[in-house]
Image (cartoon, rainbow, N blue to C red):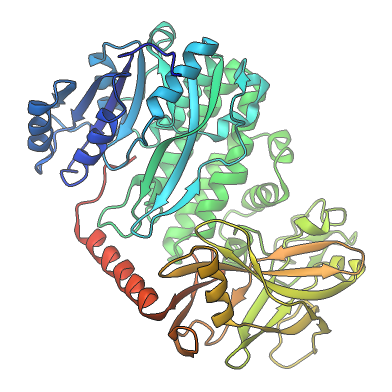
Length: 549
């Protein structure tokens, strides 16, 4: 039985030019039930019908209060601060106008906060990719349901959860420590707000319930700021917000400050690097800006990061201008990382990035095989097979006895992978147009009809989306999983006859990080889902974009 007091939460909803979606957000907050005393919707001087939609809802829902700002703030911080100023309940939650709160979210968070006398309660959040509806967990593995974190310094990794919307806050705690969002046009205001919260050392209660659904509309006419990575100004804002957050956390506890800097190297930096605009002017500006942003990091900060973030940071520090192999660096920033040849060595025999930029890749000789940034390329080999080339990496795979390879298909909607049959690796031929780097080749079966059947059996209806991986197993029992890079005409769409479905539409495509993925549309149902998906993207592209945030 729920023992939490009734009417103790204010949900603050911020909105700007989002008339088509704000009603759903507000309704999801009101549907939380009596635990929500009020919903305070802040209209940040919208120029569409957002204000009228909110006023119409308030006319029939007494718990909805609408605050109309006369001038647009340019960011998310000021309207959230306005909402807190209008709140009367002892707890506050935040909701963006294009997202929703799942049923029971407020109840679950309040129950935990009251039970453990915790000023902050946190629950699960998913990024829901629209229009398809694929849910991607936010910071998976960071929290354990039912745990109580006595103080953030006990869990420095908490700095990786920069969201404010998947949490409930005690307003007295926020007021006591003067915790507010940065005002005005301050992008990534969550970074600073969250840093201020963690620096105040609250007890944090964790619930296992889903408490926030973050809608991701990549095809919108104006994407959210977190997705607008084509503007170097966006990266500048993120770097500045990171600096401020790291400063706040470092002054509160050195462990939290360092964890914040490591998070920047391991998470923020690779995301932007692997999606880097090919324009030389953009790359030059990005490189200069990022080098300047790394000045606040000590060598100890860099050494504390994993190999990917550590090596990227040192490469940035070593060169004043982007290197000639910038695309290779962007590929290395992918997830999982992939380091293409050439594999250069320094005078002492240690692995280095390249002869032109001899930055040592420290730890390469002792890195576990499973963590090696192995590069695999893939091309078509007939109608039902692909040919792969696995590059050896400074002799590490040869030493482990690279033996077999198999395809692994990861459903993008989540779930266990579907595995292909293992095939023996053969030594790659030298010369010709084969890329340098030694290694092995194999021809792997690609039975798309069987994969579609597997997807159906696992409940994947309509269009199926799969990430493709290559798993290399070695004679010593070790293995490594790599994201293959497509070559040649592999990416052409195919219409295949199917004894089970009549027809199977197959579309290999390249992900944002350059890896191979597949869309499969079996039968009429799948084809219709593919049409709906494309139509949904077109509609999303025509509607006004969501509030930046």
